Image 1 (cartoon, rainbow, N blue to C red):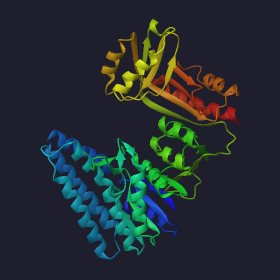
Image 2 (cartoon, one colour):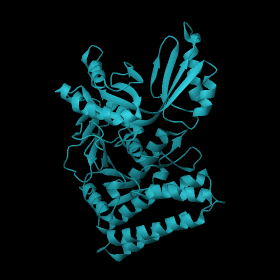
Image 3 (cartoon, one colour):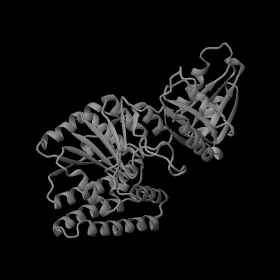
Image 4 (cartoon, rainbow, N blue to C red):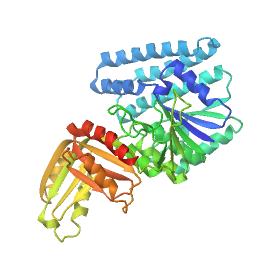
Length: 442
């Protein structure tokens, strides 16, 4: 069995829903994970903001836009089919929209927000299931809320596997299952979610639980590129990546893949393919435990919104326990650190989560002089870097010789060289690396 995930743009119009339906109905047994129709989650976020502000006019406007959008969507999707399917779809979608319209500032809470944000995936999967029924396909809609569960924001693997298998066993003769990405139940039994981009994570978790032979992530680009195609010309898809390389690229800015989605597949050693919905014949990118790629440098990614913090203290010299105390400050405020460099009397770290920045800086001043710089970008060069290969780091630094470098991290992983620069140099850095570093590798 394979697990296939399709993102919001892949189901963003009736014609694309039909195209996806053609891709998934080839007789092979599979579980299909769907995101919300493109634009829907953003509208749901806006609806939550309107409720929080008590802006009744805005919330009513958004609800009306939903009704108009999905009425047109349904009419086009089921045109030519038995009218009973359009009727069933309309009833279900209007039921969901009525729920969205039932809230107000008095009834709004964090729990309510999570319920609202879950409705996009519930709508897209209902539309797909009714469409498959209208074409005579044998498929089953699996409610993700009956088997996807997290405990302290981590997937409850045993619960998921047990309850997913119950569902699959119940419909053992069915070759095709449709389910929701992104949404889940938390440890309190409340509707929750896996955060933005979480449908990739859902697919990987399901793939592991189902013992899948392959996980496919379908988007609107033919695999993970060697650089950001929105900024750099003449990028190309990387045909093979290791799990470690893909995880580094996803974490440090490659938008095609959710950063958390690699780990479940890696633990179960399930290959992941990144494919293009609109060009399904393209090879895409394969992520697995082994690659035959000769090129040492695989790709470059960039992560924006970085803050660099430096703590200088003579108490570091010949001391032990100092770094532990510093890191405990970040742990206290649940703020992950991306990059670390140290010297005899100073430690520098980077963060991208800044909602507790002021509190962190205040706590750190206990240990010494504190400086911080905002508006930075991490450039991450990813590949197979062996310590005995003396060329790679020198080549990367040489390419960036005209760019002021704030921090460098190398040696902590055999898969990346991480460089911190000011955001104003991001485009220059990505273009220079694209034009020169891959030519060096030839």
